[in-house]
Image (cartoon, rainbow, N blue to C red; front, side, top):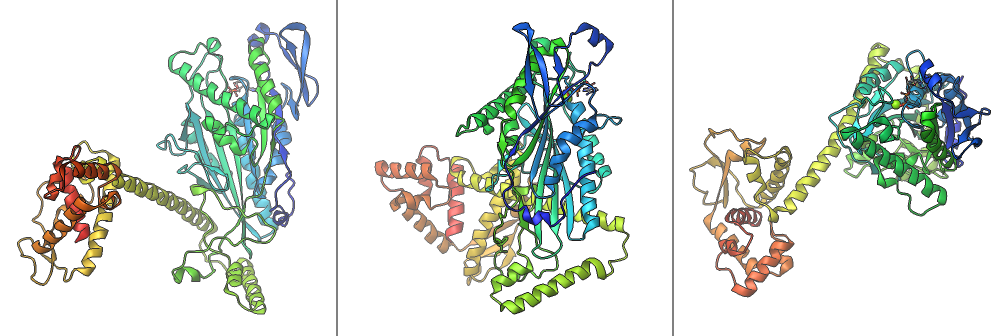
Length: 640
Ligand code: ADP
Ligand code: MG
């Protein structure tokens, strides 16, 4: 039975938790067959439930002894390993702290058996997920103070690439760090799970996406590091609406290979190289931590970057080192034991991830006033942590109490309002009957809403990325032809087509701003002359017969613009004036003129004197007629 502190303990956990050493357990797997038993002598032996000895290869009469937090002999059960090494760290998750469990050891030594197990002998992963749900349910039933949300993500690191196992089309995802030093993976799929069967529904098919290949040593030897991330979010139902987020990483590492022994060749050899190098960096990270070096090489591999939290970081970490009994594993066993021995010296600094969330009933007054939504106001003696990137949304509004405090109301009024709020919340949770929709449906709906929020968050992030790319492409225009032209060529790539509407919309914004000044603006027939009153007229072109390849371009292609000739002439001469007299800064203020082009124009002017017309720009090396035409068009439009 899991022991948990009362729910109120959570509030007292908001300070930094005590440092926690990485806990290391070693598990010896049994001989797998009579044959294996007969052929091999055992070179390793358990002494008690914490220590073991291994024959010294330099002198067969000697043994070397190792001591760990736990030693599990070849007859140990899955339950034993889980209960002793893993269960104790789980409770921290509900208090907003992170935990990591990873299986290390040579291929074939039992890592996957320990982490995943089999239906008859379930391993750490199914046990931990089941217990987490059990823990949230028992807290829920003992008090209605907190609500829980559990999400899962599942990824593998294969040849230094992060692959999303829940959404295999997400390949080679980047690993980032937010301002609070939380490691996160933008765009990594996360699914809300509300029961163990939910978890299985996602996990089982995703596991089949794992890259497995056969080697001589182990038929289903995993060639990649598999990382399951379970996130538990605990929200308070009353003011101050605290929110704790704990992350649990469950990691099944690939084994380090001796290529000569496994008979690996070609791609397998390359895989082994990649696996070895990331495990080699892992070893360097552990060494650097133990030596107290100022620079820890987390960034040197994807694996260590992801484990940054778990090694010398903020997580409660458990490492299970799996070893095999046979003589043929001797050197792998020795290496694994030495790695385990140095890992147990690492001390992590766990802390609580706490923030405040906004209950749905609080009026969003500040937003209506058109101000930025305020973020969580700090509370005394509490370390408030915002959440990382898109892994989960940041708290956006303050709670009612924070809001009232900032409004500078009389304290007695504030107190009465807060009491009222508490009363309403209690009624909402206990007294007021809920809608008659069956509970299952309500939960399903709730889950869908939450999933959509995650998707929206991801889409927003993608949009931001695209906008950034579009801006970057725009600023690099003086190096390349008109981006609009790219889209019309058949060999245009998807990215160019995607960013095109954004670039266009930026340009059309400029036009619209000018339209507000130039009156009147009318939609006319293409042949209609420019109105004598107006300076610009927009007309609709004849229907195009040819299909325009990119989205959005068809719209633009259907519209044209007539501009009063005098205005054009005036604008052209202004532009020419800037080209002939402007300094570098002024030149760069023109559209499509970057640093390089500005210098070219400046230099050309010095040698050849002023340009007689804008089109003379073509004489400058590197400026094609097309480029100049596009330069004139954009600058005329924006200066009109
Ligand atoms: P790894 O993931 O380290 O490459 P596996 O977990 O695949 O190794 O284990 C190799 C084989 O040994 C598998 O058939 C597995 O079921 C078996 N095995 C490993 N550890 C144990 C154990 N403690 N008890 C029974 N069988 C085990
Ligand atoms: Mg494995």
